[in-house]
Length: 335
Ligand code: SF4
Image 1 (cartoon, helix red, strand yellow):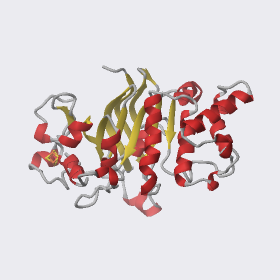
Image 2 (cartoon, helix red, strand yellow; image 1 turned 30 degrees about the horizontal axis):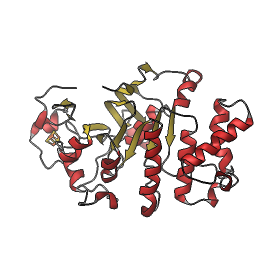
Image 3 (cartoon, rainbow, N blue to C red; image 1 turned 120 degrees about the horizontal axis):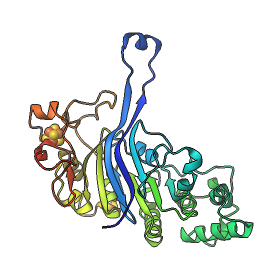
């Protein structure tokens, strides 16, 4: 079995809710948005791991927690077996180089006042990984060639606004890869792009991940895309993981009623051709006051009674590392 690059143990992130003056007088207790509420998973070296869920499920917060862009409320994050959770920034610097992120919005994530050359060169300079300017140039040119923005001379003097959305996301990919990271989080990296170029941008991105054996966490609401890209998928709902397994387990043998609903929303026969929003009856409940017991019970088509309302199901291995959090399976071994 491949070694783990990332391991997450009972990770939580609760954001305090700011109350108005009168609300704070009426409310006796502090309120929190439970964005991530106790999740466990690992990512193997070289693996593409998908984190899938509706808006508000906690997937983006999870990505930011792993990269230490925000601090967790509790729980642990291990990188190659080393606990990085409480590391001060100066000690984390060495890991920062190994862990990169590609943001959702290529229009906002690139500094509009910097040239493409300087945008890609910046992390090299900040991390001090090139001693001479010609080394910086070599790395920037190679990164641009990797993402097929060629010839590089045509792009290095341009500014982000002079590029198309797809080209900007390629620049973001080049910037993320230029330090030879071991792990990348991509947060909905193509959702802001025109549908016609999504596949092309993703292909470039994932070819490079495979080529350089980068481990990858792909955050998306789009199960249709995730199934074509990922090795394993975890399905999140209201800050919890509901189901986790290989793509085949999640897509062809889904067990959790929520995953089944997501799968039902994916069109066939060619789901890759379309981008499908997750559609379920009813609204996602508030993460400030999530439903008791199973968080999915207010929307679950397979609700089995009081136990769903009162007892929180644990994530259970139902065999072959296929994990499900549902009382329909809770007699099995708990994770
Ligand atoms: Fe549905 Fe109950 Fe399973 Fe939750 S525990 S998913 S409510 S059957």
